[in-house]
Image 1 (tube, helix red, strand yellow):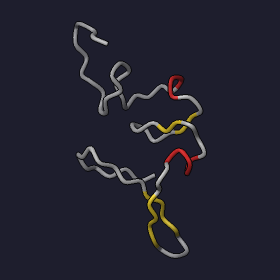
Image 2 (tube, helix red, strand yellow; image 1 turned 135 degrees about the vertical axis):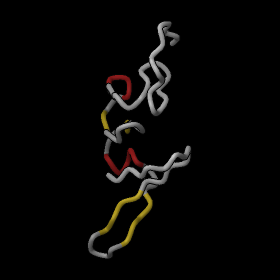
Image 3 (cartoon, rainbow, N blue to C red; image 1 turned 180 degrees about the vertical axis):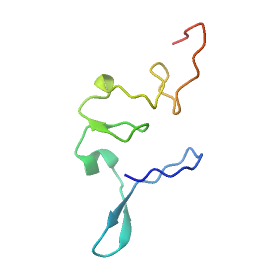
Image 4 (cartoon, helix red, strand yellow; image 1 turned 90 degrees about the vertical axis):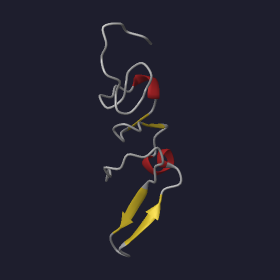
Length: 75
């Protein structure tokens, strides 16, 4: 999966058709990957989001990229 290096809150998911040499918009990423949950940080799919461990998101607030570590932990 291609991940562009653009700083934006908006996201477009595309799939490339090799035969027609054309990009198609994916309306439902969970439907396209046949998973109930798709992590926005690492683009991996799993059945339950609460069991997914990702190094690209903050474990407390789920922000992308992860929050910087401080002495005090504020969930």
